[in-house]
Image (cartoon, rainbow, N blue to C red; front, side, top):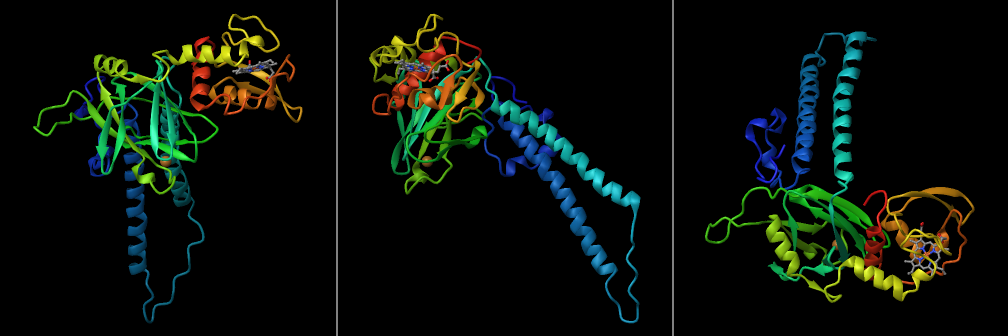
Length: 361
Ligand code: HEC
Ligand SMILES: [Cu+2]
């Protein structure tokens, strides 16, 4: 485990199977990184041991039982119950360990803590745009190879949930130092989370330790001829520096937060003639406290389904309201087009509905 906030791994606590980890893994810079590495190394050494055992036995047997002139071939043994039980249950035992361990870490990786701060990340050919809860986006860039990529600040020692979507083709969000990777898909939101620990201290050209650490964000899904340059820098810093970096960001909405912008957009687009934010139902259901709740809907073919109100559901409810009609309401909402409510505006409306509370965030 990583000692929180220090970004240092305690050597004494390293399990034995982590031997050799340094050969191919880079820096450990998030809480999930040591978990991934440890499981990977365990599987690696178990596989190596069985590989050597099996190939070793094959070689021994090939030599020992090879055909010799004048020696009649032995009859094959038909059965050996203890041996067969052993080679069935021994590997099963190791596979069960890998499964339980993998499942535990999979759940850890996929369920973001409720108090996580959210950062929206928009992928396009060929760049990344981060939008924070206060409506700002980073402007600072770094020159990599032959283009300037954005520097995306994140706080150290606190969970961050990343809400991702693409405005064009398939991309993938990959931060090798964090061991975090997820597809980024057009017309749909995907989410992931991480808690940055920063990893090993980094130094400037003069050998002085830097107050932050930088980690590459790559696109990991071939998305066109500049795919390899679709990068960004995730900069892990302490809380004070993070708040300062956030305050210095530009905001295309006059300094308004995403929630405030969402409320204004809901007003301008006439959503409040059918929806309320105070719990009263009108032509449409109220938005108060719906976030994260499950509800019953009717689909186009008349089937009943249970849905959870999340980013994807709200998106669909706006662009294609007839796809899932809330129980107790009629199909009376006219679809909005992406010209009327564009991508960034949709993100703001979602932030606003989210801010009205509910089961989870
Ligand atoms: C003409 C009335 C009307 C307008 C205007 C309207 N809606 Fe709706 N909306 C409805 C109705 C009726 C439903 C429930 C039936 C359904 O699911 O389509 C609904 C459902 C929804 C839902 C799903 C709510 C839930 O509890 O599952 C969301 C989200 C939503 N609308 C967002 C919006 C947004 C955002 C706008 C403005 C951009 C908007 N609506 C404008 C009538 C309207
Ligand atoms: Cu890409």
